[in-house]
Image 1 (cartoon, rainbow, N blue to C red):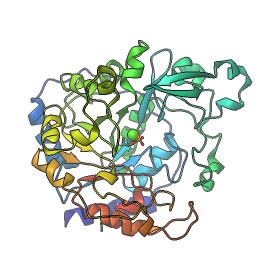
Image 2: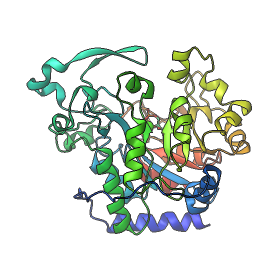
Image 3: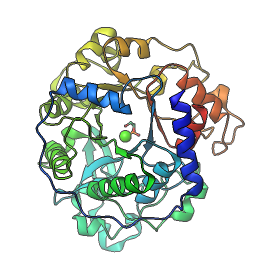
Image 4: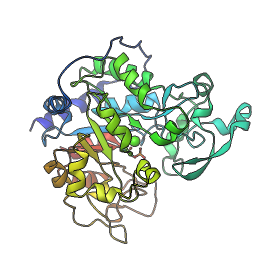
Amino acid sequence: MAFTSRFRKRLGVVALGAVAVLATTGAVPGAAQSGPSRAEAGQADAAQGSGAHADDRIVVGHRGASGYRPEHTLASYELAARMGADYIEPDLVTTSDGVLVARHEPEIGGTTDVADRPEFADRKTTKLVDGEPMTGWFAEDFTLAELKTLRAKERLPEVRPNNTIYDGRFEIPTLQEVIDLSQQLSRELHRPIGIFPETKHPTYFQEQGLALEPKLVEALNRNHLNRPNAKVQVQSFEVTNLKELDDQVRVPLVQLTSTSGAPYDFVKSGDPRTYEDMTTPEGLREIATYADGLGPSIGQIIPLDADGNTTEPTSLVDDSHAAGLSVVPWTFRAENEFLPADYDSSDDPAEWGDALGWAKAVWDTGVDGLFADHPDVVIEAAE
Ligand code: G3P
Ligand code: CA
């Protein structure tokens, strides 16, 4: 089917492409475009290949190709695109001067060399992030100029020791740099490389007067990406900010959910609904009033038993499709550490298990896409 040949073509690009960090280009100026309604926008998106067609599934480079490079670096995103990913995924936090940057959480000690920088020693502190104490250094306590002096390092050196050879090489990228890279690679690879940004801890940043959403909308407008057929999807684990963004952006919105817990904005406001409640057929119909896609944990689709082995798939994919939502679960990873027990190859957490088999099992549930730390593996498994 079309899906197979499309992926094969991408893999050909990998073989030919030199993997080098690209210089970034300037922003494309332009204001938000007038255009179709949000419902029409969703249809337009599906028609151009980032929707819920079984033969047009998408691969999202999760934090880039983070199985091979330190996460959320331009090198990681670039490799994901060259491997064939349709989208690259920047998680977004903010600097003290209001610039969106790509990090998985506000605390930056786990993924940068900040702890080795004596000039920033006094910035170490403890904060409550979504009600949980977190100790370290926080992006929002640094200006962009200060953050740019730091260098990324591998988050999981025990599981991904090979990635540590890149420690100290790459900067923390801004959202603008990620957009510039996606546009440059789109031109070079002759296919659109989309972005799949996630607003991280929206309530937390709003409470500090550093809301992420206005900056994200501004960036989409500035780059001529706030239009129905832009290759952009915006995700959040919270609900309120997605509902507000529904009035401000014309690109698809994705509600993230998990096997446990609840959106922090619900917790904060006393709303008792959990992610489990949100993924019932009724909950999915409510999500479909403001979002276009569901981003569940893979474990919500293929639950694990008490021993960590896979069990029968749930009805979540079918229920989501019935509600009109596409389904792009997170996160495929190849190492034993992250695989279900019945796909492990040994007790070594860093060794790869039956990663292709696992990827095939997830594709076989009918999902419309996959977040992957190893985009090449899920593309191969889709053959
Ligand atoms: O955004 C999808 C997936 O990335 C959610 O998990 O924690 O890796 O951002 P996380
Ligand atoms: Ca994410």
